[in-house]
Amino acid sequence: MSKPIIKSWWKHGVMYQIYPRSFKDSNNDGIGDLEGIIQSLDYLQDVGVDGIWLSPIYRSPMYDFGYDVSDYCSIDPIFGTIANFKKLLKEAEKRNIAIIMDMVLNHTSHLHPWFVESRSSVDNPKRDWYIWHPGKNGKVPNNWMAAFGGRAWTWDELTRHYYLHLFTEQQPDLNWHNPEVKKAMVDVLRYWLDMGVKGFRFDVINYIVKDINVRSNPYRLRLTYPRRHDLQVHIYDRNQPEIHDILKELRQLLDSYGDTMSVGETYPNEGEKEPAMAASYQGNNDELHLSFDFSTIYARFNAREFECILKNWYHAIGDSGWPCHVLSNHDQSRAITRLANNDVRKAKLLAVMLLTQKGTPFIYYGEEIGMVDGKIKRSQIQDPLGKKYWPFHKGRDKARTPMQWDVTPNAGFSNGKPWLPVNSDYVTTNVLQQQRNKQSILHLYKDCIAIRRLHPALYAGDIEFVSAPDDVLLYKRVFKNEHLMIALNFSKAKKDVTIGVKGEVLLSSCGNSSMHSSHSSIHGGTLTLDAYEAVIIKVQ
Ligand code: GLC
Image (tube, rainbow, N blue to C red; front, side, top):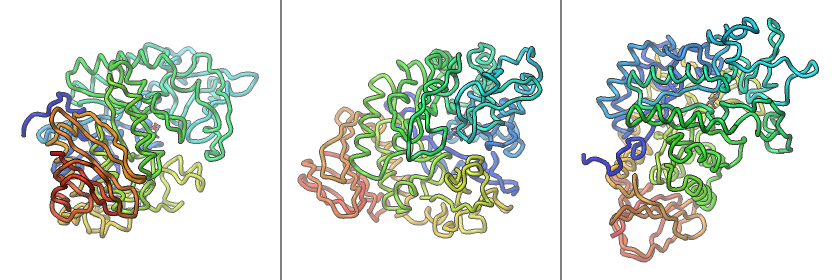
């Protein structure tokens, strides 16, 4: 295959997020593991994946399923060993797949030795590695709330101080005002980079520094988000200016390792579309390589709404940064359920949209086979967020159910009892069955990724939105002489779209041939799109 026009693999490549507990269990303890991922690499290569982002696999007491790390330089025995991880790196490299680690810089586990030391006495050398406060007038220091319920401050009887935790009380926040913390974390990053990982997804990176004077956030009224945490504007507990300088240093570190990358979870105020905030963390191409804009996660299935969100995102990123796109992750309802009422036709349209935007697409495991949100009973809830807020927020387990590989018991995920129930639709929605069906959503993903790889206009070109009837999103991707046009019909009715060009249909989401092509060519004038049809046209 010829070399892509742009150098950086993470710019032209396709990323795939694995939630390791739920991907493939090789030792039948009901929890996915590294060996299971190794066994699945041929599949991922066949899909066309260039990079894998692994949700945390470090040693952890698992109060937040790995996002509470107790040793950053080890692998939790549930997932395997360092030897398994090195094997994964090697096997992935053979298939030209890069491995990206999830790095939690904001907080550690309360069982991390740093915190154990820090809480042991007020004059412990690690005391200032975390955020301690004596309280104000016998009460908590300020009004900050934890995202997972209750106050963000927990009283520690031993030293009679509060410590800060923006998530669960088992996740104390590190004090990034202390340079020793940064130094320790840089050592951790080096440890994994030296081993061969090609970058990091930085967890809640816009939270890492807090107002040094711990001022209270202003309150505001919101009817749609009744959680107390969401009834304030988070101006003092996130997005502090010091974060930019830290990211500049981390960028220099990553760049010193060659073609590595970082992508930041830049979490907005819940439910809000804030592309400028996410974009700001790319700096002047000297901070994060990529940052997630959550606007698409909060969107509705509507052509004009997506057009507006995408335009805002490109505008916010400008010319110096690089966009990336995501529809689902381990914290949100899956896009096919949230946006598409579990309708595969709509999910195929979303896939074409995701894979034909300018920038790096991120696929969430199972998305490529149309896995829907699981139905989790109260007694089955594992997620601390669900335990705390049920029934108002039933937690994130629904998006973390086991990968559906085939029709054998437990969908081929495990021969043990899976840690979360397998979705009942696995008999019809699974990898094996879809590999055999050329019209499946899996083939659509594969075809679309293959087309993307062949056409610089898709992975390197500019994007231009074109006016179109209501319910239709129309845009051009252009690189030198290559022009592609993408038309997406968000409506359940057929739609005529005047495109005014001659072209060849490279892909249609409603097609029935192996390349999903239903119209072979268009001779200018009008293109008729079926309900929820998405097409990619090569303009002649
Ligand atoms: C991020 C992770 C989420 C985790 C939280 C606390 O938002 O994506 O899963 O619970 O950070 O670490």
